[in-house]
Amino acid sequence: MYDLNGKSVLIVGGSSGIGLATALAAAAEGARVTIASRSAEKLAAAKAQDPALDTATLDSTDDAAVEAVFAGGKVWDHIFVTSTAPKSGGAKTLATADAMAGMDGKFWSGYRIARFAKIAPDGSLTLTSGVRSQRPNASGMLQSAINSAVEGLGRGLSVELAPVRVNVISPGIIETPLFGAMPAPDREAMFERMRKELPVRRLGQPEDVALAVISLMKNPYISGTTIVVDGGALMALTI
Image (tube, rainbow, N blue to C red; front, side):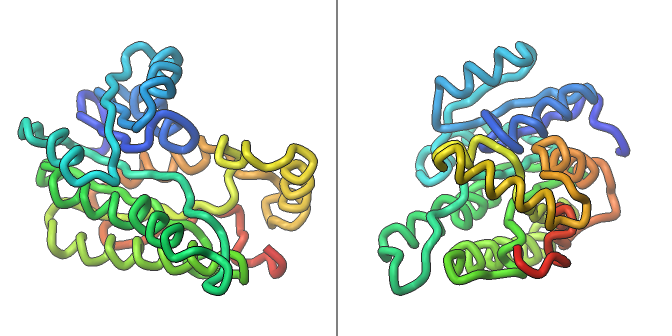
């Protein structure tokens, strides 16, 4: 119960960033890991890092696609759902369609997985929110709302799906490909500011979050909670 050796683990959004780091960590502990993503190209690149990883193409925003992936009835020991962040913006500037797409990609994706996946009674489901659920800012209103909703979903599912354990991981700023679209000077300036302002004086890495996700899989006495992995960002006044 306290280890992952021989356990079946599914990482939805496992082709890069936090998802891939978690997949590699679980595989290193002896788990049989499947990574799922919309991009076959990213899945192939991820598998190249560890040929033992299984892959599955999955669009978690598509009800029929999610249902089809789980139609075979396979029972998973642990599932971790991570996704890209929604577009930033306030209610006055962000188009409603973009806001709804953000909710679909993060909140409803987790809902779909919980709805259709079969998880062993002593297994776990871990969803992903973010520290903006507790620390909104003017340009991150939507992120705050969606992350808060994911955390509420996790608490509710922990009761509905019991004894399956359901938890939420809430990362802070993590150095992942998510920031690849930012101009390099802007990205590095933001990262440097974060390094100075965070109490830990370093930037978060995908492996930092993966450690917390793995612990949630392995610990049989944690359910219905949100684990924050943010380097102390909630204590940093300007983040």
